[in-house]
Image (cartoon, rainbow, N blue to C red; front, side):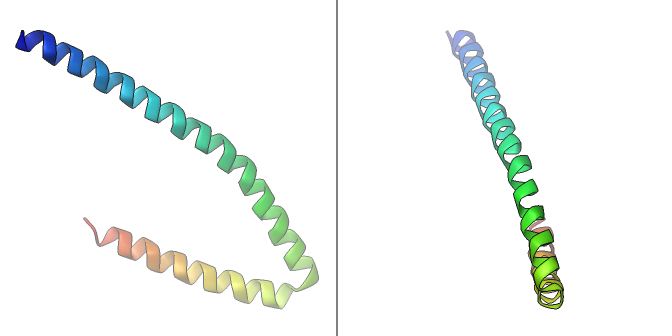
Length: 75
């Protein structure tokens, strides 16, 4: 009986993982398309206000580094 439950549990776990991986694949596809949109916005901003855009991008990059450092401290 226990062995049956263990196999059934393993199969359910495997199906759940496959479901999650499929969702991640869909998210990745949407994000890749959205990244193109973000790059288009960046190009447009650089053409119309290059100094302000560079300043803003530096601030974004600084905050991204802080987020990355915080994440690395979780270890």
